Image (cartoon, rainbow, N blue to C red; front, side, top):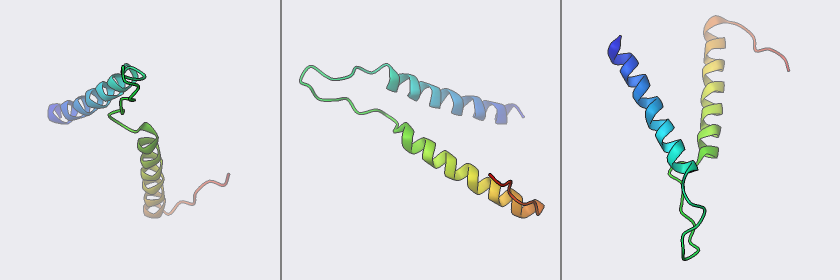
Length: 70
């Protein structure tokens, strides 16, 4: 159980660290070149939405429930 909690905490710290590093970066360098973020958060959000909908559909198939309308 401790290992599982440690893995979860490590994942959260990694994601949190990447988010903080991306939000605290300067807007542009002295030569006008923009610094690229470590993570493209829009892509992460899209992947998360598709994953969550796939999990929900799988759960509905397993339990035999119908998705809610709307």
